[in-house]
Length: 337
Image (cartoon, rainbow, N blue to C red):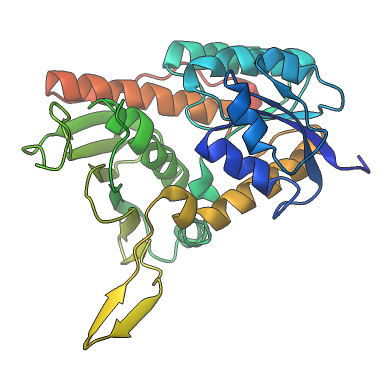
């Protein structure tokens, strides 16, 4: 492909508008040629300053718009399956923000549809794989210099949760990133989940079980613990420490700006994921565009999205029942190695 990749963006909310800004801006080789959102006024606002970009109220209409060669799916998760199956039917490469779909059954249908094509078209938006610190940790673990990984200690904190957030969404929406990061960093599957529930924070909305401590067991004998606290009140923090046989390594402590004044010092803390992972999103979309220009997909796969959905459902059951819950994956299609 010699020209810029024509991208249809499905969704026009906070993250979607950030991607629209990114494509053709910090990420070259692509341009937005269609945007779809049921709220067409919001979509019009997202493409303000980009004359000639048509806005659609229907996602499938955007896929069929002139010049569309790839699709970025960032619409509400309930709409993902239809969009992904339609993109596969049209042979369009896709970057799909997580989750792949709302549940494992629908995610498996997407996996099976892509497997029938015999080639990968879908990349899932687990952007931590593109963060420079996480990539360095992955390289270190793969080198074997620290020996076999024994444990991962993970921390995931948000300033506050959206009004619609439920207790199970702490796992399915937030911890889904740790699910993928653990599978990727360790090169192992998660085999069981246990969820411990301390007394909820006074800062959590009534009825929300926040924070939680989520424990994963893996196929290689490692243990992963995740502190998820979505109403910490002070900032957005994501950290991961790998404890290995011959040493440990931690990421997420890159220093922000420190301001010294009036006899004290103050370190700025990012307030949301679009700030903390801005560079990772740039790298992710840049890699996707490069692969899509070749008519293919790389990076986190539809299978990774399916596996995350299965683990998240096991986590929801563990939260509800208060017991260790095993994870059962279907057989991996040959397409995904």
